[in-house]
Length: 361
Image (tube, rainbow, N blue to C red; front, side, top):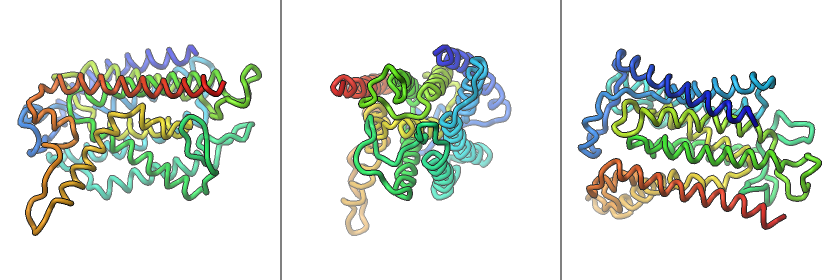
């Protein structure tokens, strides 16, 4: 349990200092953010703010996790390495996108097809390794062949379907966090709460994991390395917390796709390996809300488009946080209120998780 605290504290400090260094260096190199022209006019003042701050989040979390494991005289588990692969892999896809934007001085980085290819490659490799390799002495793999809410349920799915589902979860989660990262501190603040929740979930699963002699084997959690997942979740929580110091309004740096895709990939990884894929929809409720707003906007626009004319819109602008900006809300008010909603979603998710354990025991 000391490793959890150690990784969180080290990651927080590394992120605080590392983000400050990133601001200085990226400003010197001219790695500034380009702003979409059709967005709120208040965002135009942000043009030139350093981006790719997600580099500091990813490096701080991974280094803190490794240091905490070494300090405890232990090495990373298979689940830990796989989650690091997913975290860093999605971050690298985002880094390429960000680098093209700042190098070409345009708002468009990787084309959507190229970005999807990168995400797919990372997700499929993760899915195959997590479901077919690295079984422990109990025969438990990092990921299961079932769709899970809190425990595995239903029918055992064929490998090809499992790989497709994992691909869908990874790409959906990474793109959802990417869509949410549109206001100062919004995605970083929500990520603190979400990964903090997965720290608690993993700690509880470790204390009630199958195989422990003092645990009811009928209602235990079949997770391969829950304690290791808790250490990494704490590291990511600390990294987001430290980054938020510099990313809160007025932001001195943006996480960019480097950070948002990495955090979304990590969120998917925690949900998959903790067997809480469907519960993630509740814990990450704001990410789901942001994504649904875009889907509804595009769908409604296409359905109402007739005879070559313009379609109608449900919202003034999506993702939905921009809708409230266009209504005249101050950016800080939008962020704080979305944080409150995120806190409610996280509390509800943790309540469902604990409530299910209370009911079955």
